[in-house]
Image (cartoon, rainbow, N blue to C red; front, side):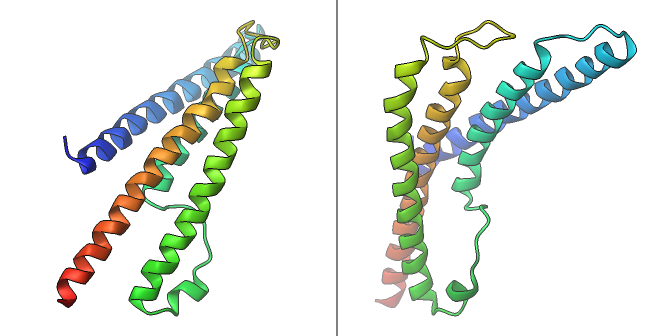
Length: 165
């Protein structure tokens, strides 16, 4: 399997999972509203589950935003650079973002295992490791998607060098 195929597979799986989580979250919220306001019998754990589903959706979905570099950014200075300088500046920006995500990932790996066994979700009664794992898994997939970005940058640089020869 080619490197591009691995990153495309990860992206497709994350897209399917986040779409399913979002659909499940919407259905849960609609059912919860129906029970609360129509039947006057609220589902006490629905809000907590909806929050946990949203956390998983956001952290997993952010990895696909990274893969396409669809994040919010200000490009006033970047747009004024030459095409070669833009590639270099873009690579530096992505390296800084990668370092930040890696730092947060390491912090999450260190802190979450220390508290997960002591905390329980109040309404669902499940260990808090379930929603907290969204941080670790999401950041891990973000790092993987950054590697895909770096592969793309390297391929772009190689193709530019070949065209200049």
